[in-house]
Amino acid sequence: MIIGVGTDILKISRIENIFNKYGGRFSRRILCRAELNIFENKNKSISFLAKRFSVKEAASKALGTGIGAISWHDFEVKNDSFGAPILKLTGGAKKKMEEIGASQALISLSDESDHVLSFVVIF
Image (cartoon, rainbow, N blue to C red):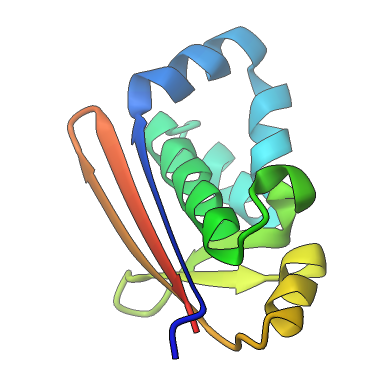
């Protein structure tokens, strides 16, 4: 049974402008340690940062909390062996999943030129 659905569409240039203004402070706020390591090894790819931002926004909407109630670091976007995105929840996000009786979160992530679209289903 589907418990929550969240979506986010984001203009990549918006994240680029924020990163240009705040630099590492912004990326450290959004990305967990593992994601930050990848980001720094990818020459600080704005597309990578925008995708993580968008998925985390969509996931917080699917949980019904919004990002303010849960830390950005409670969501980690990884890739399986085929490159498909998977979502790992920890801390407050994991606790909220348990509270609402959900056990899985699936992600769909797309990007095209200057936009990212994320879709998260929680069941």
